[in-house]
Image (cartoon, rainbow, N blue to C red; front, side, top):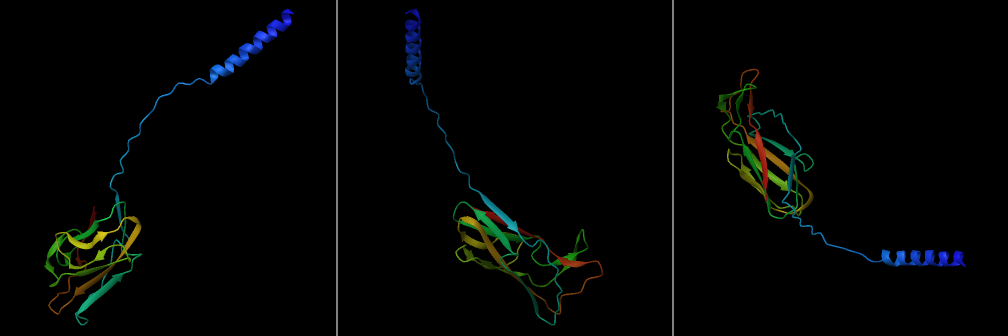
Length: 174
């Protein structure tokens, strides 16, 4: 009889233990997050070598969309700008600019993918010029680039070791 009573008490405690386990306590945690404006820019072609000839009147170079500029943005309305270190190609000895430069600036035309934004044609300048406006958000957007450099008989050849040179800086903003 004592054995049975002891088993019954043990079973009762086990059942009560399961019932007590169903009771809970809780609280909440709040997560507040902001998505930052994000814009990514990559210039696919970092260097170009041109052979300029005054008999041709101008030199043209087109970089297709896979060799131009790529952008990604998480917001509509981005703008792609470009500026040049000098407004015309200028004598360069590898470390310093000289005094000679070509007579005309480079004309640059942007060719964005369909639905990317509005492309523009500009003359390179030392100030920011709009290449693409009204850019659309989303995965990688590609922009082809077309360069035209007028060459005249007044443009002088340079000594060995010198080239005509400028550096283009691309900037994108939202």
